[in-house]
Structures are given as structure tokens and as C-alpha cells.
Image 1 (cartoon, rainbow, N blue to C red):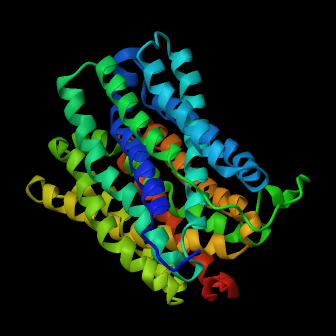
Image 2 (cartoon, rainbow, N blue to C red; image 1 turned 45 degrees about the horizontal axis):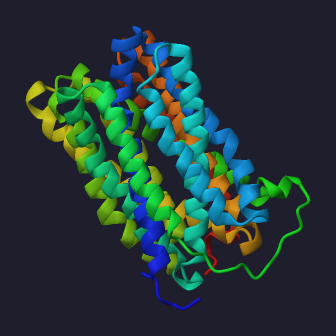
Image 3 (cartoon, one colour; image 1 turned 180 degrees about the horizontal axis):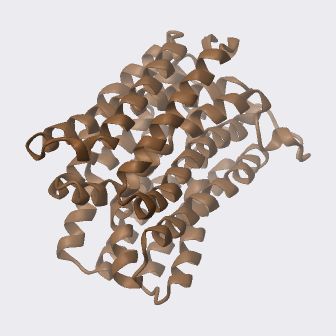
Length: 392
């Protein structure tokens, strides 16, 4: 491998990742509306149904990590992407809530495999001395898709039928599958033994970091799923899609910078900054309904931008932490653990967000809960002080 970061394979994996998350983010803010309008689901039901996606995603990822470490990684990537693309079309034929739940489970599992596969493959084509920087640039694909995906999704919601939206998203995902199929990954120098142990699925030294990341991403999960409905409740409904755009701008600014700082040995400071920011954002969203109507729009969008900076800093930092805790032969397990921790936090936010809305009269309550969990996460990180954080 050369020290060239922006090579052909990196471009293909990053582009495939962009289309994957573009279809994901375009659909996400529509689902609470879809479930309410098509199946008359209440807040708790919406949270339970949407959390099925995250549960299946979380369950499949350790097994996908094992497959990536014991098989050729490229076929796993392409197959999972194909299944992910096909499910969008199946949504158009969905007639019952139970069938929709089944499809969400399949969709979550395929998304989990596709993201772990892409995340594992991209670390193979990034020079190790530029790992943090490369992961930061790779994350820009997610950022750009977050910037335009929800806006396109909410625009389509106002002008197109759900069936048309599902078919359009199928086309977007297929475009990503095409890019994924062109990736050519060099052979690995190590051929692992296919014996299943606990290390095949988890990195034991990363357990504390996993818990820290889970707690930190609860509020993020509630934001990405319910922010459009939350905006309607707080009389800034027209800005629901723009929240994602402002957050994406913050992510775009912070991720490349954070990646370079990671490579310079500043992971601990970046995570500390990100967790502190997450606490502030959770409190801000929790208190939005208490502010005068005249200042809510500016406060709302400013919060989005700052949230993007905070989580944009944390993403490459946590990702690099997990990758550096192990060797290349267990890269799949490490990447899987990072994504699993990320999704557990998001899934908790999705599940509890719907319940909080029903029992506390609004989605603001989940941000209060998220702020408390972020504070616990920060305290745990302060006490951790693991030597692996500062490895070069």
C-alpha cells in the first residue's frame, strides 16, 4: 500500500457509502409520518417499529465482522448492499404493519452488514499513518448525504406518493451497489484461522469505550429520527429538513480536521470536546419549548450546526480507537464493535424517543434523558485514561 490517500478504491468505497446513507437519510424522517398515516401507529408503536431496524442492525454486525475477518470481504459487501437496495422496492408492496416490521428487520440487517463491510474495506486502502485523516474524509460521504437526504425526503413527502418515493430510493441504492461492485481490495497478508471465539465478535479491550459511545449517541438517535416531528411540535416545522443541513455543515467542517488531529495523537481531547458538546446540545433541545417563539428558529438551526461539530469530532475519534485496539486480522471485529456501539446508542434513542413523546407530551423529554446519559459518558471517559487512546 502506498501513502496515497485519495486512490481509486477509496473513491469507490466512499461513493458507495454516500449512496447508502443518502437513501437511508432520505427515508428516515419520513417514517414517523408514514407509520402514523398508513397504519395509525401511536408514539410508542412508532418507536418500537423503528427500533426493529436498529436491533437487527446491531445483532447482525458482530457476525458480519466475523465473516469479514474469515472470508473475502468484497463479496460480503456487495451482497449486503444488493439486499439493502431490494428492500426499498418491497416497501412499495407493503400492506400490513407486520409485513413492514419484517421488511425493516431485513433492511436493518443488510444495512448493518453493508456499513461494517464498507468501513472495514476502507481501512484496508488507507495508509495506517493517515488512518484518522482517511476515516474523517470517508465520513464526509455520510455528512453530504445527511445534508441533502432529509431535505430531498421531506420534499418528496410533500409532492410524491410513498410508492414513488420507495422506488426512487431503490434507484439511489442500486447506484451505490454499482459503485461497490467496482471496488478491488488487495489481498490480506494474514489468513486467519476460522475458529469461533469471543474475540471473533468483540474486542474485549474496547468494552468501556463501547459503553461510552452507546451513552453518547442516545440523543443523536432521537435527533436523526424525530427532529422533523419535534420541529412541528415546537412551531419551527418548516426547518425540520434544514436542521439536517446545518448539522451536516458542522460535520463537514469538523470531520477532516478531527481526522488529522487523531493522527497527531489528540484522540482524548477530541472525545472530551465531543462529549461536552453533546451534553450542551441535549440540554438546548430539551429547553427549546421554553424559549420565545421569535428566537426559536435561530436557536434551533444554531444547535444543529454545533451538534454536527460535536458528533463530527467524535466519529473518527471513536472509530480510530477501536481500529487501533487490534491488528489487521481482526479489523472486521473492531469495525463491527464501533458500529454496534454507535447503533445501540441510536437505537435506544429511537425506542425511548417515541415513548417519551407519548408519556411526557413531547419529544423534548428524550433530550433531557440524553443529556444525563452524555454526562455519565463523559465521567466514564475521564476515568478511563487508557494508553491505547494516544497510540500513534
